[in-house]
Length: 347
Image 1 (tube, one colour):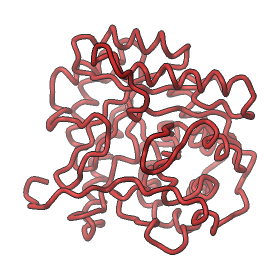
Image 2 (tube, one colour; image 1 turned 135 degrees about the vertical axis):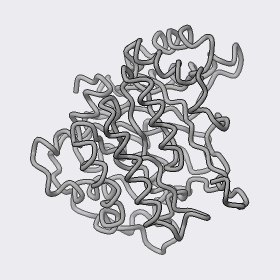
Image 3 (cartoon, helix red, strand yellow; image 1 turned 90 degrees about the vertical axis):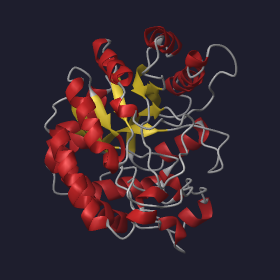
Image 4 (cartoon, helix red, strand yellow; image 1 turned 135 degrees about the horizontal axis):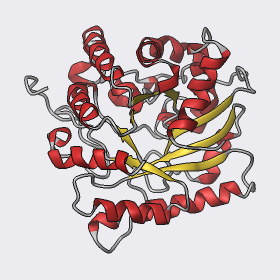
């Protein structure tokens, strides 16, 4: 985006407003369909609001058949002291405790945090030791790493660890991604659509690493991108088609209810219905399913980030509307099987 002379803007996640969300209530579509939610966070210290096990369970038990979830790193509860490379292990320690609590059955049927995706600097010379520490702290739940590369000239980064420019092209980073595959670990890729060509280079260089692109490849619709959705869609589709040719690459379907994507539901007097979300998101999600196939696609909530714009039951209803024409086998893959296989969950 170097040709665009723009001022960076802060597109932080909207605050969750329970009363606003409650304006739209819907009957649950296909309530028996088993679901693995492969992407959510936990935190207690963010402006968007508290989201710990108690809040998560309320969403998981709100009508859809959620059987398990995967926690995604978010810079929460890092250790406050010790070697910098090892501080993110604190997040894994705390989330593993949540997983143990959930597995006890005291919080209902869903197995929250059955998988844990942690943070590690993939460029670090201490990477193997850090991965060992995550494994020890994860109590059998540690599955992989997300080292975010999402960066754009128009957006103030909101991640706890701001990625440096050119991260995806850094040979040390590429070696780190390769090392994950050698150790049987997964890599979650959080990038914007403007970085998909660079991600393709990484995917081709690390064919032995199971990778998943978060949030349908991060199509931007804010700031200077707002009036260019058709143009962006065409470029995004071409890049995603190339990534789909890499058999190790998967994609998460969701994560579009962020201000950077430009749908801006949070600015309306009422939250969106599932039909409205499905209409807005189907071009992106449908294209991913077409290119990657259900066996490499998984629906995700991205909660509580997306909760600033829509409720959990409405969101999964929207996904079920998008997948309405799929076969029973395809639905099983999209909602459960792909995520369970990718993250090695026995649920």
